[in-house]
Length: 184
Image 1: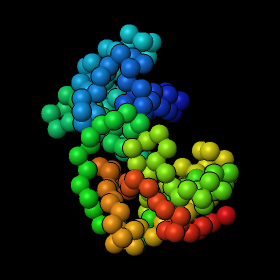
Image 2: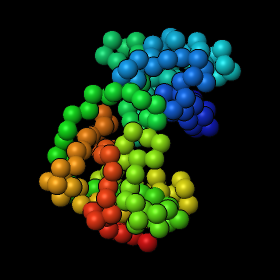
Image 3: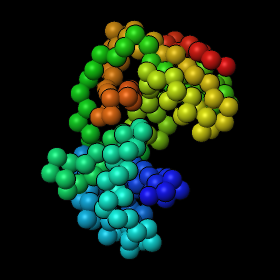
Image 4: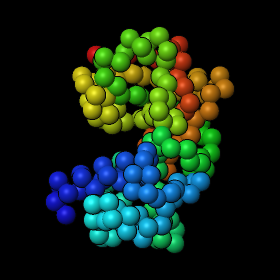
């Protein structure tokens, strides 16, 4: 599969499995899973034909590990980033001393007033990877990295969860007092 096709299918899967399953008339179960056969048939019926091999390649090769296949190999779900309500079964984890959040500089004024909010997602996304934070921030304009005092937040009672990919940390809100500007 060429890079253009890979990107198109990956974006389509993110849209459907994280935000708008109704666009192809499928329903996710309470944990975010959908039968692979159902997804492929509905995608085809709505103009996006995906081969099962392409789907499996995307799950295996996705650098952000956005998707998982169920242990029985029959279902797929997004690992994080949902705006639709799903229960992914996360367990509380103790975060590292600091975590990072990438954003665009144009969002900084509101962040310094409100903190980091989950917007239309279920969680605020954080990472230990400066590269990932820069990549995320760059999607929306000139990137800036925020350093989050995660360990202190956890000590102060804010829960943290680690997504299935082991790279994306999740929390409900990051108050301003825990945010430092790492890079302008």
